[in-house]
Length: 172
Image (cartoon, rainbow, N blue to C red; front, side, top):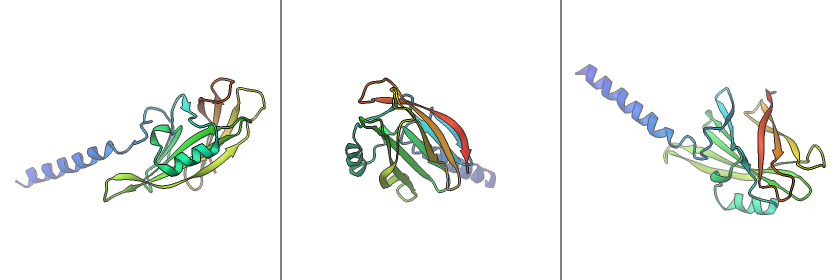
């Protein structure tokens, strides 16, 4: 009887763990992991969307609601359990701007909830010639940054998508 109860208890734990997996990737980018580092996973869409051509349009969208389907870059953190998604915009002059949305895990609701939306950073292209290329730093945790190379797909504005690769492993 005790053995049966233990088996039932472990089965219940396994079901609870597996039921949480569906919520683990609301941005749906699990098949595009660039790097895994100390409990954090950096993923990108390939090609990554650039849904906005003006910072003001991106900021309006960020403030309005969660944009999980439009994230180009997503950082999944295990501790604290958090998702940070980055939206991209490229203006006429070639400035790449990243907007971010932070989602924290709500234990009682068993889902991620949006807690912050903001303009993260802006970058000038490395060269004025098109297609543009940028080197972007994304924080993996409080001490580490990952450098990404982002290249415009196509040489005409507005830029609709970019390719993203790792320039360097995380550094302090």
